[in-house]
Image (cartoon, rainbow, N blue to C red; front, side, top):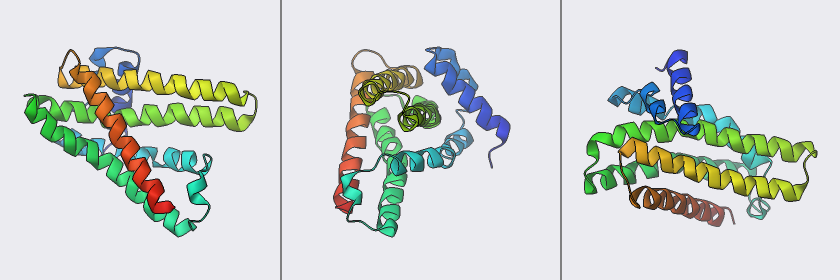
Length: 189
């Protein structure tokens, strides 16, 4: 089981990475045990994920019942947490970074807490009505660009890769996420 201190150290590490400090990696447990514990971040951020779903309605939910939405979205959530690490396990072998795989995935997984946090803050701003809707759209787009840059740093530092490879990794991860969302919406429609 993971301790509160391990969670706080991991969150501090990814916070340092968010601040563009590569030494944030030093705060993460990149052991095999730390690898498996990093997937517990999925439990930590699940309430934020549910909030985002609940307050960002989509037309795909109109004809789907609550049970169907829960089953499909929960399945999609689990697939989202497993698919990228599985793909990276093969990609890391292909570009000779197997020894960095665990380090990267630990940072990648824990960074989800920061990313969900950013989008929950934007959701709260939208819900408050204090910020114009047009600005919320701009803020959401800026957050997306900023968080893609964050993922780029995690790929560079975590896998110790340079050049266009980190950009390709982030692009592939983004594309995978879009495919998972498209399949999810298709199953709800």
